[in-house]
Each structure stands twice: as structure tokens, then as C-alpha cells.
Image 1 (cartoon, rainbow, N blue to C red):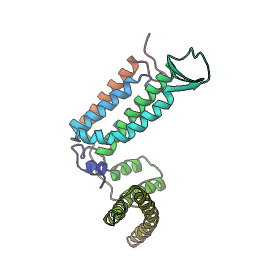
Image 2 (cartoon, helix red, strand yellow; image 1 turned 180 degrees about the vertical axis):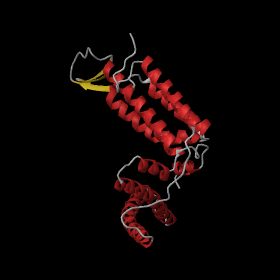
Image 3 (cartoon, one colour; image 1 turned 45 degrees about the vertical axis):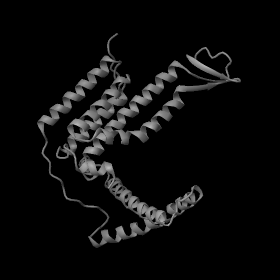
Image 4 (cartoon, rainbow, N blue to C red; image 1 turned 180 degrees about the horizontal axis):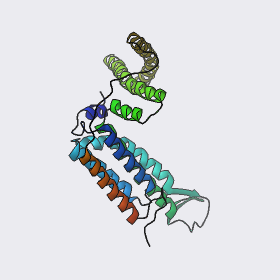
Length: 269
């Protein structure tokens, strides 16, 4: 079981209505992209991580490890936006540049502003994603989407894909362990060959497990629709008020720091 799925079943916000967590996540996500100021997504990220650490009881070390890989991709994406390349010998529009023998690489104020916005919004959206995924199991997220009348075909595909993540991880781990026991990674050349063999075997195992899963579903009465037990939850007025308070505070912050582009509202000045 991957670490995200484990904490989604074992956290202090596990018993909170999944619809409340879903609503809070969606509203915060919209504010991340609607606010014109990069301050708002950063605040959203801090709020989400604060709720995860102090509310859900997720260790901050776990959040740090989970942020490492996506944050590196976000940094690379921001770097491609912040730097501009031109053949102009006198790039007056650039605040800082380096002349590499006729090829000028520099930073423009507009590019820097766009990179900051991209970086902050991506981090804020990532915080929203981690809040929902670390506090709510996938089966409950699918339940919420089903209540929102999402197409049944899409929900079934989501359920099966999520299930096969664990199937493929278990198969890859078993194959890797067998290869390692046979010194399949004793050198770089052998490791590349073992990795290619692992990938090719994984496709065969995935097809085999898919057939087994389909036969198991047929044996349990599958007729084209995956049916699960309907979950029963009670809505908490205290949680609704807390969500309204937090979202209103973030919205007011957005108004004070530049406005909200989604609805065309601007702060004065």
C-alpha cells in the first residue's frame, strides 16, 4: 500500500464527511487560480499543510517527501518561463541578461512575474490535492463524484485504474526482488538490461491480472456496472462554518492583494 493510501485511511480527519472535504478542496483550488496575487496560493498551501499536520496528524516529514518530486518539476517549469532567449544585442526589456556570443539569455519583468504566478499557483493546487488525497480514501472520493452525477463509465475507469496502481506496484516489486536476488543490478549495464526486462514482463503481468480481475468480477455478478455499498455520513454544521470562515478569509485576502480574476472583482486603488 502506497503511503498516500495508507494515510488516507489512518488520519484524524478520516471520519469527516467526504463531501465537506471535497467542497473545501474545490473552493480553495478555485481561489488559487482566481486570485491575481501569488500570495493567495501560498496562503492556501500553508492552510492545507497546517490542517494536514495539526488536524489530520500527518507527519511533516511525510509531506516534505511527497513534495520533493512535484516541486522539482514545478521549478523546472518555472525556469522555462522566467528565462528568455533572444538574438537582440541590446535587450533593453530585460532586467538581467547574459550575452553568450550573440545569444542573449535573460530575465524580463513580465517573465519573472509569470513564473512566480505559475510556481505559487502550482504549489497551492498541489497542497489542495494532497489535503484531499491524504484525508479521504479513493472509494469515498468516487462516492462523492457519484452523488454529483458524474458519468458511471468515468467513475468505473477511475476505480479500476486506481486498483491497478497497487497491482502493478506489487508485480514490479516481486520481479525486481527476483532480479536483485540473481544479481540483476550488479552493474550499470546489467541494470539497464534488467530494467528493460522488468518493463516488458510488467505489461504481460498487467494483462494477465486484468483477465483475472474481470473473471472475478463476473463471478460476483458484474453486469457492466460496479456497485458498492452506499456510505452514510452526517453533515457537521461546525465543519461547514469552519469551511465558510476559512474560504471567506482567503477570498478577502485575494481582494486586498490584487483582486479575483474569475469574477472580475478588483480591490480598490
